[in-house]
Length: 320
Picture 1 (cartoon, rainbow, N blue to C red):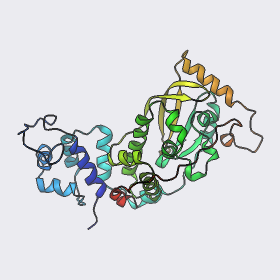
Picture 2 (cartoon, rainbow, N blue to C red):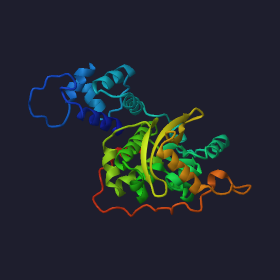
Picture 3 (spheres, rainbow, N blue to C red):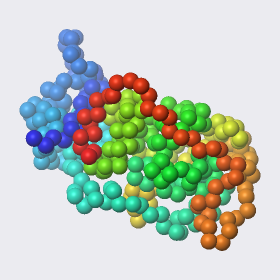
Picture 4 (cartoon, rainbow, N blue to C red):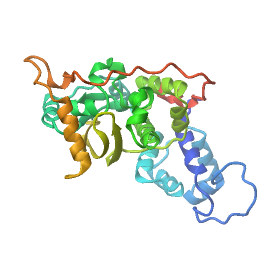
């Protein structure tokens, strides 16, 4: 029988994190074989039969109503991003959406011009699977020269886990890496049958134990704004805020712009970085977005797969 494995795993992961006290239930003090609430307790809180909830958690493909999903969301104490993810998992994408997920994305010329105009601050356009579709020279100087990489490797998740410079560049690498994985998991809820996503997750699950562990956590996250701390080899320490704006013409594309507080040492560090990358304008016919600074850091290649047993990748069944 065709099962919605991703839905069942997400429900179990959210149930496991809630204690009876948090749910307002009395704890009988007895031994619990699994962490968190029992299935019977979630069914009680959601006002559905135990059999119905068990079938959902086992991945049975039921025509579940929005009312029931709302009740389960409240019982599991989901935040708005998790609630959206639950609805996407319970109501899989149509065949048209499946085809769209594999169609190459294009960045409009006007958006590329905008990246070029933002010459004093890092900016980039992210697409499906956190692919880096376009970046300005400040973003390439801050992170890595994505344009110098093969198209398949122009991806923020690959950079975070496969480029050894990333772990020293991000002051709080572990926090940002977990957010990246959770953002990719959110995308998986929208496009569960994207074969390129399955390839990316499968590869990183095998080669990186951190990714494998965090992917199994089932956490979801939406990047909208925040603060990131860097220690750049040229510019030194930087504290940058970012705004991530979803593009109305393509919800699977978003523009991310990094800025520094006015008058701060980070603003001065960005000026230093801009001076370091400043070169003559590209010759006629060469697109500005594909110009790379002569002093750019060398491209880092993905490390060889780490030794160790292959993890359980059953959650990739629905991604193929």
